[in-house]
Image (cartoon, rainbow, N blue to C red; front, side, top):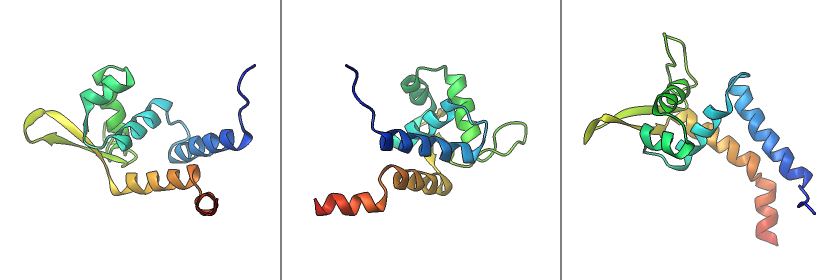
Length: 124
């Protein structure tokens, strides 16, 4: 018999996806996965991001561009991450969160672990 999925767990996932959708109604899931991977491993290179996601490096570069301040052709990006040249290896780009990215991540943390549930866990 399959494991029963709790309604509140599904609702949490939906809220996280909705948070990404508020950034951009057409945001591809690959952008969301890229953001979460970067948040999990700040300082990751674009090549490492591609490897972890199982995508081409060119796709990882496009994802990072979309999540950065400027996407392409002068189009504004989401300004959640920034890619900077690695001073030790100039061809390598290191990706970190921007202040806006950190704020967005903090909002996701509240969705996943609301303040009320943290208090309840401490009392238990």
